[in-house]
Length: 197
Ligand SMILES: C[S@@+](CC[C@H](N)C(=O)[O-])C[C@H]1O[C@@H](n2cnc3c(N)ncnc32)[C@H](O)[C@@H]1O
Image (cartoon, rainbow, N blue to C red; front, side, top):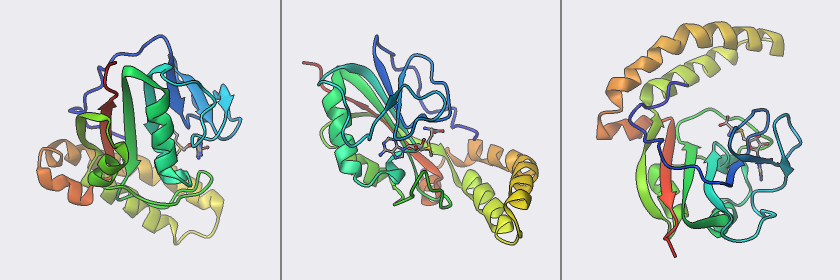
């Protein structure tokens, strides 16, 4: 992943911050919640029913999770509920991206689709995390893998071809300047803020 350098990232972390779906990774500064007890996970729960009181977290991170949940509107209701007044939520979701089940893969999002989910949270920034060049690279890679006979071959080619195709993604640095880039956007992002009380 070559993230869009124009995506703002300097929103403040607070005393308590929640990372949804961070299984398999360490996420310093956040409480890491996932559906499964994977490495790095501190709370096992469904993001559709968060086991926390209202107004608790200064930041909620939801990166590449909404496509995997049964009810994304329930997840958004929960994010809104547990965010502290004045707190920030960060949503990232795929638009043009291959199927990937964690443990299921139900849908894709346009930027407008994410905005619809955001409801009454204030939008503070929006755009594409990764653009048309990332889309081309991931689809090319998955297309080649379709021809391979075994999981071992697919893993090997994923490593080698993924590395060889990586420079293609630098084209996104130019393409993401265009408002047309979203026609083939790879992952969209939204930064949202809950109104201060
Ligand atoms: C594609 S991974 C995203 C990982 C990480 N956020 C990243 O960007 O690399 C999706 C994660 O969401 C978790 N997940 C899926 N459904 C969930 C749910 N209903 N509640 C909480 N976590 C869920 C999966 O177990 C998986 O770890």
